[in-house]
Image (cartoon, rainbow, N blue to C red; front, side, top):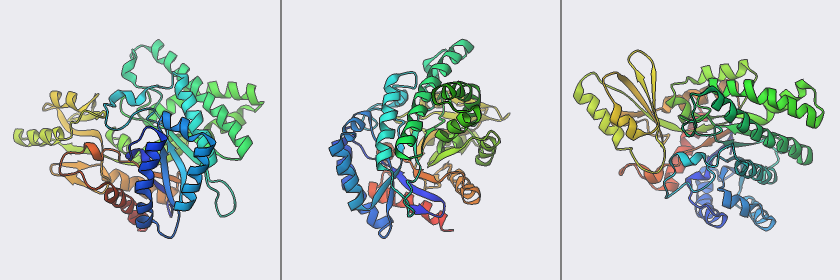
Length: 409
């Protein structure tokens, strides 16, 4: 929906269904009620997540036309998509396979191009008849622990291969814009243990690989000047600011945005999400209470990476919550865990959420409007500890209204 801060929707990765028929059925069951609760008098925005299988089915003309009609009849619109999870995302062990197939593969390229073709059809027009820009979030190229990441030659090979595949999509986006007048951007989503994990790593990849490789390719392929090629790359490849992920890494929102601005790089969308955090007390009983509280969130479906801040200020990274639980010691001053918890809950006993980071990001968005796309993304309702699982429709409503209340302040 259109808000003072930009377009706002929720990501449909909260709904199961790897086939289009199953996912569409889940949308038909949930969305009309949410539309009436959240935006009865104006269109409701959605961030569409399609598994690879569903994308192949939705691209069929008869399915795409039927979905367009349903969106129009229901009073909803698609302005962004989530192209990170390729395959099964619910009721199965996902863990590091959320990155598979990664950006070293043609399967990831083909999937992403297909999503953009679908998005180019679904994007609505504004009151002046112009199509609104559309974004598609994607993985941070790959999962670093699949490679010998400490070897410079291995890193260079992976960055070169994945960047060339990203540029295949950039070429597709330029052509789609020429054919349809739809501006769309690929939004890379830094994540703990991704090949791109931090703002600095995103900037380094962009300046060291994407720009030099892309300028050479686009000047040759489209006859652009170096300046025009660079502008096209910066327009079509952006950063997805997942608030949970940056909070886990202790990155301050204003600092991230300032770094991007200094390099002329842009944010494609904000994924509004919250992580878990807690400071460790000095006494042994208090530390054990915090450890046990985190243990309640140890579940087998998704990766829950932990970044520990030690008393000397250094950061220790753990690939999953069980590894951190086994390694906690007196040097740990604070933990932050990659677990997307409800954004409207500020604390969980001795644990807290990183809700304050969301407030800071939204405040900055109100001040400097660094994107026009916001997507609430909490997909963990099924795996929350008992006592925190609430009705799904009620939960989505509460999350969206929490953001809407902030944007109205």
